[in-house]
Image (cartoon, rainbow, N blue to C red):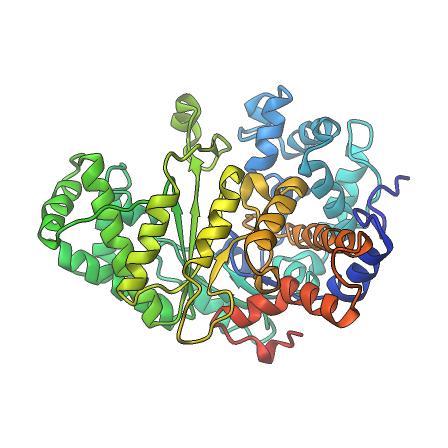
Length: 477
């Protein structure tokens, strides 16, 4: 039996081991950004088999399986769940060097007590043992969340959602984890995409009014912000291919909106004007309600047209974009919001690590605030292709080098899987080894109180204090 994932996995010196086991390991989890299903939480879903829990919607694994030559039938197709699991298991040995190899075996040990390596010889035994455990009541969705020591979950929700499942979750008498919606208005900005007209129509239905003008459209978006606010939302999220910024005149926006509403394409310049204007309006609404605004940028999506036509978005055909110009529009956008007194707490996640230092220096330009918020503008954790060991270390290094690591709000899952909370363990081990290496090299003092504050702040306390979501009554440290 393998002991690959042992107690001191990734902890390569005594200080790292002490920091992890003494401070980091048992800190609660504040998962402020994920893609978990609120329906599954509300209904306390139980999974029929490990394929449903592990492979359903996981495009990280899908990409690896395709690279290993697995037929799409066993990935997103109609193959038997057991055969899909076998195909994934046969892929796992070939993920050596990829974070998937680590995540797979951490999850097997953490949630199923399985220490064997998953491969073509062990898969059937592991399939049977996992499935047997999944039939137990303490493997329901809510029990997995509680066992993972999670205090807050921020799901990702369309502005037109009625949030009925969040209401159900909030009314549960025996589930103390706070599950709040996050406002994700991407479709409302992407005026040149096929999703824009359907979004406007859905927004009209949600608001029960015609959005016949740009002013009415903006007001409807702000009204949805208020609706989400009343349901507990305190965080927004914007997924942008690049950072938009363009100067515009107010009287230009009506014509641009009408073109988009009719299904016509607008020029790139007008698209940038429209996106900038929408961000201005939404950021103002966020700040007025003391929300945090997340901006994820730098992905180029749905690159395989044939597979997009077959499977749709979020199927594993996205990658890192070179983004073009970043510094000018990003600084200009933040500056314009600051000048309008509309810059909320903001977290920037960059998918292309080439720009890490750029982000690290940019956030420092806009930390000034009358409210005295520490780390008001954040450089978000390694995202998507960067939530790996090298990616996390690059982000931590750039943030520490250019800003204040002590105020970092830490890790998130950004996942659709209920056992991805092991990524917090992965991050915490990497963080403790990162800091421990500094200590062992004599680069920072071996001061227990100072190191405890650094580790506990990043693992949980900073997020708890940064977001305007009450968690004191939930037993957070």
